[in-house]
Image 1 (cartoon, rainbow, N blue to C red):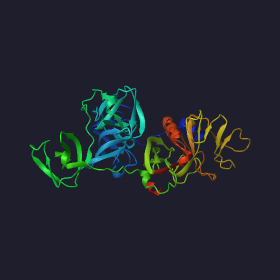
Image 2: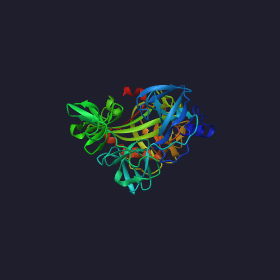
Image 3: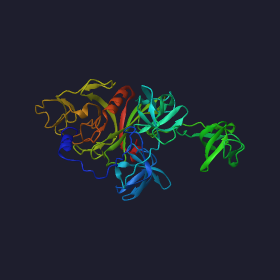
Image 4: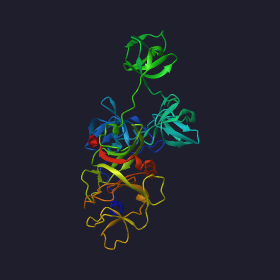
Length: 448
């Protein structure tokens, strides 16, 4: 339930933090959700009894190991709510919610800061205008540029990877990092039977080894007719006449492996590390020309007690499962959604009385004996949202009023994210594409 119980919880009791939160370090910000770099010597201690180490900054990435309470970590940088660490000689990521700083320092920025020069500049999902726009930045805004791919800069944008045209940004000159970001590596294939790898870009440089036909090379940059490569842990150069760019397959999306989507062409995926966390990752996907494409990634929140495999009325947990999407709603005019839309009035309520014949339905006051309790719909959390079609059979006590709505702290059983993201998703949803929402811990996605 969202209204009465949530209000009592928020006003009547303080949420006790069971784990230390991330420590704020004092250096210039380049955007709330953009990557903030930390010195490699900053040490943090694990506060959770056991904490997963993942291959990337998010719960959708694979687990490469774990650390335990009291263990000291060397944190290199921060990406959203994730810390990049050295883990057994490789790069790993841990949630910042479960570690705390064991000391303070002033870390240098790892990435180069650039400033937008265009009035509005699209941020795209790939390095080219053929890729979808995932948002925009405005004149004067600072960007954290990670690398360069052709005439496009790779940036950290709202916790995900984005690309902007290099024609419309310029170096801010406020960092000791190189003003030209490093090139992203590209995979090439050797076409010669045997090809020398040299210590410099020319035949006058000594051979430091060789590669053979069909071998894949990671090319970092080009110098004249020579490609700079990573070769056995050192820098090498090969002639560009004897390699060609490799055809690369599109990265596999998590929804590509789902077997239960039926005729759904739009999917909202809500995932969490485990059943007990209130933090969630929200992703949207759409099938275009027979292939799934990712549209949006955002941070979200679940019920105060996380996910539930078997939800009950008032348990403060969000139900797992796959559900269709019902009516969109809001306290204001339709923001542009194609879903059926209902504007909330001061008399609108959602019945949460399990003994009422109107349990788990949208009704209007006065009750006139039809229910003993109902949730007020005219609240800020419901500025915009949509109904998740949970417990459509209206089984008493199984849970009611399960919505996708506005919120950034926790809910009483719904799923929530920022108002901007809710509106964006509402405008994207199309009932003709049979949209569904899937809610699950990452470890159980194979059910779908």
